[in-house]
Length: 568
Ligand code: FBP
Image 1 (cartoon, rainbow, N blue to C red):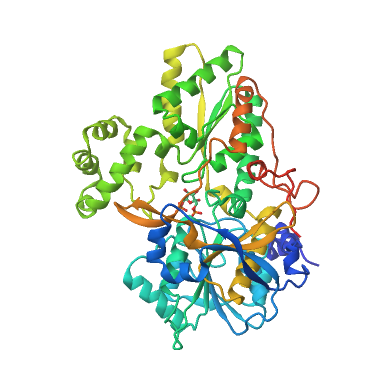
Image 2: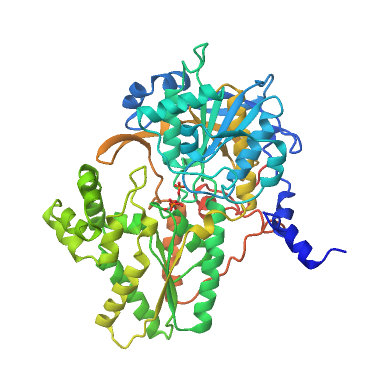
């Protein structure tokens, strides 16, 4: 008879009772793919919708093959594929930060490619593609990863493929592994990478002069890869925000129980405040900062602090000495004076990289100050050391400031405490800081993310079997059964200044002041500040009546009639 210890041993290596049960969870598919038990590839046709940006003319010159082939037209599924290609060798990789549902994209791909094609996994991320680290994905692997969180099956990294040598290595990988297609699962930067790769690999890779197809899949918990009704949300956002929502709900419950603390909670999301907005809609805390609003109103750091302090004091006068402040991770970059400082710092650091690197850490702030304009030098000098060090820390390979390392929540606590003393020194203020980030990226996907990503995988695989390249797979109409579509990547490219030079990028979708979600939030926040009206969304559900809930902000912004999604 098996002992409890034997049972516990069997649960190691991703075999907890939960993980075992979740793997068996059935997933719905869009009607276009047919039967959920045996989904079939679809073919695609041009729609009349042509995408463009202000930089489309420059894009057409730099991406002649991709733009020539797609005409920047959006594709929609056009029925079951009459004769889907066979014998294709397809590589799949994760790129950038993890997001729940990535494994299901791989499962959907494997499913739709079927036994007639080969799916290869790249380990890890773009770096693995450059190094040529690929292995064949088998059906048994898929059974083990379905509906599980994280990117651990393949691993991921943030390498940007940018030098000639890197591009040539990727070409070598394609030749050595006889690749016909590559699927890049990533965010805005990674899909930009996919667009550049699609153009580079468009032709002349194989002996017959043909190329390698490249398809992107929209991932990021940040939710900043959104393209109106064509891409209501990237995958991973729903899972991350539901995990944060549960944790914030629990903290709110504690504030009203212990009656003595303010909690300043920074929420992940590098630039845009979509994550913070969604968690605020779910939990209704006293104060929520939205970076985009701070920028739109040109609020200074001291104005933001004063606004928080005024609310703390007003609540204290009502006998409420507790509350929660939600802070978007990217706030610091949206405060106008800080934005200008960071922009100049980015240029100065890019132009003086070698000298800067050679210096001792303690000498770096003074070195940089001497290179900055007078007002930015003065601002840098006025900031606490812990903030300066983070502002000078290494950028990621896409040139982004690593905002997750900046302790904005602590800075706001310190400044708010001083501001409250100036208003009324009798008001008690005891605060804790939190950063909810990595906890939310790799949880098992919600039913929304699990179903959405499986269908994104089916869509990406179908695009490959249909011979397409340079598109991002998408599934639209998420409350009406779901429709597989494809977005031409070149139709999304803009020119932006990064690392001190102009580059093609997919613009991040920020929170819009006139969006339905923002307007609803603005209409409710005064009431949430005046008295405790918070609620606890609870843990994410995979079974039962509330399992089908989609993100509130997505439902509001897409004009859905209910909070429930429907795929299939
Ligand atoms: P992606 O845009 O690559 O999906 O990354 C999202 C993110 O989780 C951000 O929210 C966060 O700022 C960043 O990654 C953290 O990066 P890292 O994992 O490199 O610390």
